[in-house]
Length: 113
Length: 116
Image 1: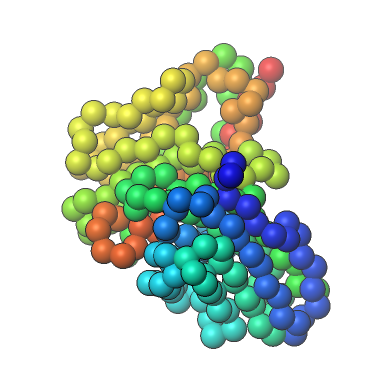
Image 2: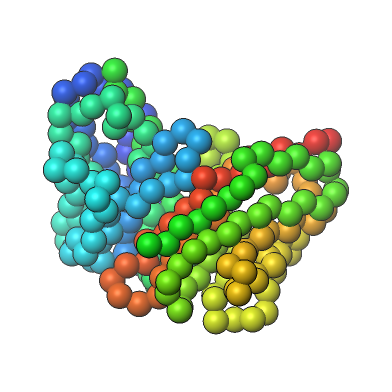
């Protein structure tokens, strides 16, 4: 295991469609974070898991967004009824200690047409 | 709420020279930590350096060092002997101790160019 992986790397969809992204964290990490990054901005926090429990959700995470982390391993982020404003890079990060480094994946770039 | 401000959208440095990237932050927390992350073009974000707020000594990692001014809520990054591979977006970030969080608050980033 060499790092955090995300799939797919790129996704193009039409407005109104549902999309799902996957994140595989570093295996020994119990913390997993989702961030969204738009052009010219830094990453913005979306949600956080400790093991399988989703402990925090940002106000940015509308009702169309849902995230899961079954069995505390990989995580999925689903966006329902996509809108053009959802176009962004979706970053996943994992960490073992909340006070230390978060390791980021390469991101999934979503384009909503 | 925590905020992180990077006032320099772009910076440029000559190879082998030194450059300083600025960052200010605002937090009501007494215990927190600060990071600089590097995001090369089309590549994933990696940690450059980390500083715990309770430590007075400035963190250093090889050619990278910080100037942490807690009272001024300033956290600048100094890159010495700049190399072409240092060209990237640099993000300053802050995070809290405790609770169930640990999520990071990022600035908007500074794009660093390195001239040969």
